[in-house]
Image (cartoon, rainbow, N blue to C red; front, side):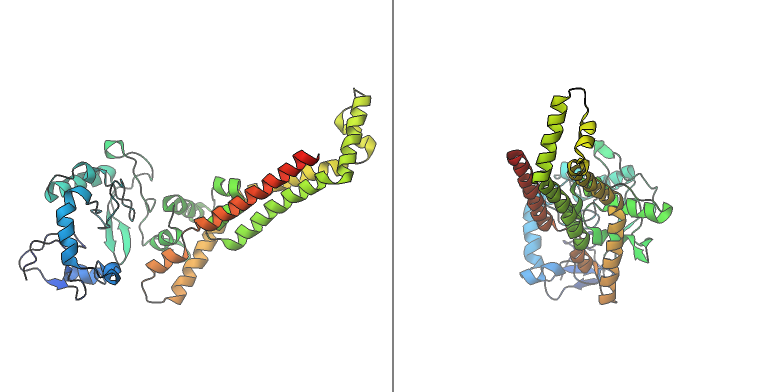
Amino acid sequence: MDFNQYKCPVCNKQFESGDDIVVCPECGAPHHRECYEEHGSCFFEDKHSQDFSFENFNAVNSDNSDENDNTCPVCRFNNKPGVMFCERCGCPLHDKQQNQNTDDNNQNQQFNQNTQNTQNSYTYQNGQFNRNNTQTPPPFGFGAAGVPNFDPLAGMNSEETIADDISVGEMAKFVGKNTNYFLMVFNRVKQFGRSKFNFGAFLFSGVYFLYRKMYLPGIIFSLLIIATNVLATYLRLTPEYISASNEVISYINNRSSMSSYDALMMTNKIWIIYAPELLTWVRYGIMLFSGFLANRIYLGHCVKGIKKVKAQNQGENINDKLTAKGGVNLPLALSFGIAIVVILFICEYFQLTVI
């Protein structure tokens, strides 16, 4: 069979006469033998369970290539229409979209030019994206046409070790969301022993940990935030607190020159008045503690999770398992976040209506 009209799905190069070609027995997709062995399986293996047929796929893509094709030139991931950067490797796609009506040679030349401008290029090998040894750009900045650069590996190679015999590629797979930030932070911990303050963990404390699938710290921090707020509200609603507050107000009204502190000392109930305020400051302290330690806690969580996956799947391709084990849990974080907001609202409501 003549495959010269097709391209290898791994390297995206047109087949030529004399090429050593391997055809997938399940879907009929042709590959260069070298590309097939390097990839380790059919490029469309994840679609086999959906009765995927390369012949039908190629016919549909040929009809709609100018309109809907948004395949990444580096990793060949089929992105959604309109996406400016590859959802898998972060490669810029804007020039490809701007020149959808040009032929394949012009697109390849344009992509190579953009790669040189942004100084970002990647090679896909053994399920990992390796950053080529080009001049290392800063992880943030602006490339061609004013479009921001995005380096998902934060300027590092996927085979580079970042913590306890764990590679950058494995860490990126486990982190999932916002990999460039966490890889920079983890590398800073490795190189200098210093982390960064995490404002997300400071503002949302326990909810942030739950979002990152750190369930035990998430539950602990959430309960501490709830407990300090509920206890402070309870103390403000006690008869002792209300009585002490009224006494202080009475002393101040009768002696206009007296300060609130002097009035408290005269009533000898200063501890009753300041106990709820102390709990409020304890809550702020917990939030600060969360912000300062969140990245280090998350690094330990990632290392432990990756080691567990590697121990349970020795000698196997663990990329999918790392992605499933890591990542984020948005539904759980939203549920706890809403519950905490409701509890805080109820506490404020009681304080306003009773006091």
